[in-house]
Length: 451
Ligand SMILES: Cc1ncc(COP(=O)(O)O)c(C=O)c1O
Image (spheres, rainbow, N blue to C red):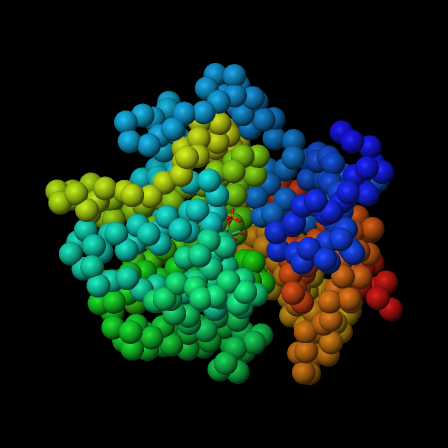
């Protein structure tokens, strides 16, 4: 490794960071993380903190998951790469697809299409949805519906169904045929509705209105996160996703669950769809599938959708999508080991218990600090606090204050993530109650330092 001075001097000078302004990265250089152990990370100055971000919602099993590391190393020696495009496969993707079929059996998903990450999974699911209707002879079904505030990665189809302006505006024009429904966000919504159940009904009414306005025969799919994540952690009322499922069924629309962050236990259930008792037609997964140690993803496909493709005699069912790294044997090896560890440790149970502790602790902080306008969570280890200049007007807090909070929290022992006026928490699912306490006391110290 280059020495500390070299790293600090060249920090952000010769690379552009995702989701950052290049000039800002130079004037506020990012923390240089050089080590990870358990659920903690260490920076170049030797400062160690609990990772309240969990890498990026993906290091669910922490940084010391030896079985995944061993599986990657062993596979690099055995077969570091081979393609699974038509005509060849590898032993590990066969095994992994069999394991995933078992893991997602309760969700009604039995086929896997492998990708290189979350944005790829979203892209594949959206493409397969259109193709499904074409194979069935409904080629007019090409449009997509989604939720405002939803995040579906940054490929152009994904950005088109994305519900946040900051991932869209500079890249417009996006894909035509994508329409958005109000988010189930009780703190701010166009209906001025604070009751989550009533708000869910209003969102569903808006969805049906849009379906009828567009014409159901023109719509391919509705895509949603079971709990909205990157848009600010917005858990919908329990009636929302079942209501969406019912409307999709009524109008022949496929339901795509974007579970890039919620699959594999984060919500306290093995999938976010299962949390709400819903069976999607397609499910996007990535991130925790390899514990973040290898870029990998899988789109899971329901039996019903699979039958349409597999029973096709016209040739239209041939899949014209895929990536060089689809089904990468090293990624598959990582995913097999990761899935075994995920199940062995039953991480969903710890996610539920520690998630409650974290949510309760954040709710207590709200009593103490006026700057906290809203606390969201309550479903596993995904929480957010929304900061406002004053509670009455709900004016979002300025960048400088939230930046200062982030810094002070970090100095006091916890890495948290700032997104707009939200602080987002998504720690590894294997953290213990002391680690949660550390995150809470670091945040408390962070708020106290703002004066
Ligand atoms: C719900 C959701 N979908 C898609 C993505 C995109 O995944 P990736 O960054 O791996 O491309 C993310 C990333 O955070 C996500 O949260």
